[in-house]
Length: 281
Image (cartoon, rainbow, N blue to C red):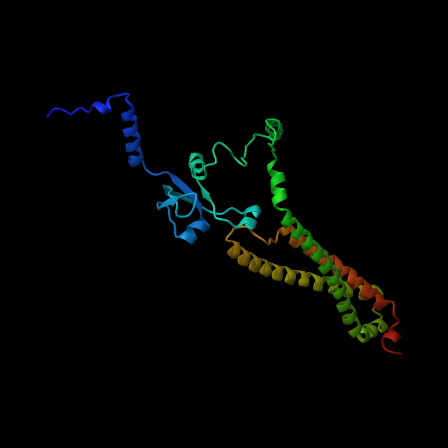
């Protein structure tokens, strides 16, 4: 049977282009988007699901396929917004929001710091209204709240250290005062002042190290509870409380120094008192 010819589908005709465009629209697979894990969990989406994206709820939109589910990054700037995120192709976004060839902001990757400065000057000099910023300055601005919280925690830490030092000194003074009769008896049978001083200081050092270890364990447990609660609340992998090796070493050394200082003060108060006075005579 001879092939039928349609005069309106001749090569190069306008009708041919229109028909081909319609056929491509119906035969081409839908484009893909990427959604964050929070949105996927809230909407029950999985990779391969078809969804309709539109500028307004209930309006006509484009059918797309969920091509990927993105895990949320540990970015402090995203915590304050706490919004769902969808990533799509640029032309999709332009047709969806009808924003034309305009952008609010964009990111440019550079090779090194020198190229960064060249890019900053070129963008800032391109036209009035353009303002380029290095990424570290933007991160510093968005993390200003966390800096304030960090300073607040540092002030609390200083107050806690001073209070703990006073508390440790009081405990050692009470401990030494309870043993004054024993120390007086040992002094009367020939125990030297230096021996008493060393024993009290050594005891204070041991108590300080044990207290520091207990404090690290309590801090580690409290840090785990804080991270578990806020990571679940904000649905983020960001760690809100961190205990590092440097913090542990700093706490241990500081506790030991405070213990030695408190033990020395308590021991000096003891050895400078005559044995008979310690016995109440």
